[in-house]
Length: 265
Image (spheres, one colour):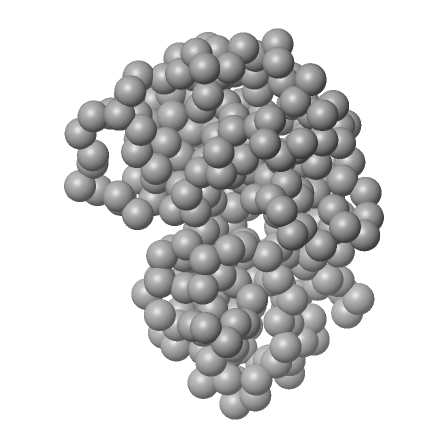
C-alpha cells in the first residue's frame, strides 16, 4: 500500500531532507523509524528538497509498505520511533501511483524575520534577526511585483541544475508580508521554485524594507536574469515549508492550516 504522511520537523540538526554523506538527514531518520516500526526499510518520496537548517510545518512524504497499523494510529506509533525533532501529524492511504513530489500542484513557504534589536530567547533557531526597523508596506509593494509568471533566474543561486538544463519560469500566486509585533513573515506560494529562490526573494524584500531598493525596480531585476541584481540569500534557519497543495486529495486538503501560515508559537 502507498501511504502519505504529513510531517513537521525542526531542521536545525539535519543536513536537509535528502540522504547525504555529510550528516543525518530527515529522510534517513524517517527511514530509521519506519524500519524500527515495520521491520522493513521502504524508500520514501519527499515533496521537496529542503536544505540544511530549513524547517517544515506540513511536509508531504509517501512510501510503499505492507502496513497493518490503522492509519489513524500510525502517527502515534511512528512518533515513538523518531527523534523529537520530527513528528508525524497525519497518515493516509493514497493511490499506488501517487508521488508526493510530482503530484504537488503548489507549495507554500514562509520566511520568518525577528525584527528587533533584542533577540528572542524563544525559537532563536526558527527565524533570522534583523535589528533595524523594516518598512513592511514597502516590502509588500515589492512583493506584489513578484506575483505572476516570470523568469526567476535572478533569484537563483549559482550552480542550480534546473537553470542549466531547463526553464527558469515559475508562477507565484501569493507573495505576502505580515507583521505581528516584532515578527515579520514573508509567505510565498508558487507552482515550483529554483534553488534558494525564497531566501533570495526574502532578501530582496528586506532591501525594500530598508529603503535600499525601490519596489519599482523589481521588474527590471527579473528581466536582467542577473543574480547580482537581487538581494542577499538570507540564512536557512528562517525558512519553513508551510504547506503542499494536492487538490485531488480532499482528506489531505482538510488539514490545511487556517490563519497565519508561519505561526509556530
